[in-house]
Length: 103
Length: 122
Image 1 (cartoon, helix red, strand yellow):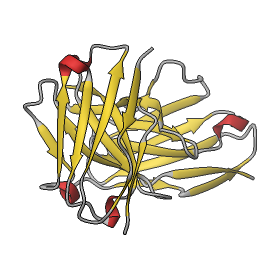
Image 2 (cartoon, helix red, strand yellow):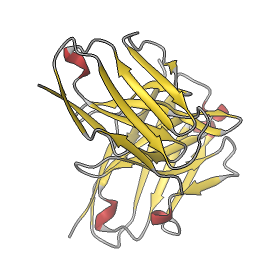
Image 3 (cartoon, one colour):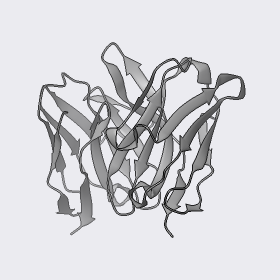
């Protein structure tokens, strides 16, 4: 089974910061990777699919990149609404999550 | 609007059974693979099961194989998860999710329901 490792597990940042979250897979997944944002008590919200394609309605400050085994989710300028937990996903496997906290 | 609405979550004793439902609207339900994704309290996301458009292909995470069954009724735009022999570790919010598919299979989940809570406890 494929393993997915996100880093960091927790990230403390301020409004306006550039934030980068990394997802590494134990074997190549080409560009078949998705990213989600989840807030407490809410369903996950799709952000990115196929590593770099932005879901409809998602702000352009979110971007994704990578291929093979290493991927990044970048928030170019962190906004108050972005404090949440972020997950990467390939097929039936999710990363363990990265919590973005207020510094 | 595209929407998924789950129902059926409840408190159930270990060894008991429960049937979850997911009502779809706003899209052609019969065109899509569908999944159940769960999240234990304070934990991450775990894919549990999925089903193809006509119900002929079904897949499960190892921990629920032989205990959970996934079905769908395309005429009623509904997805179901029958959960038997429930264990404490099945306690979670269960989300119904629509799959985005490509040549490589699952490319992600592009529509999610609000979730329904299943608690397995005596």
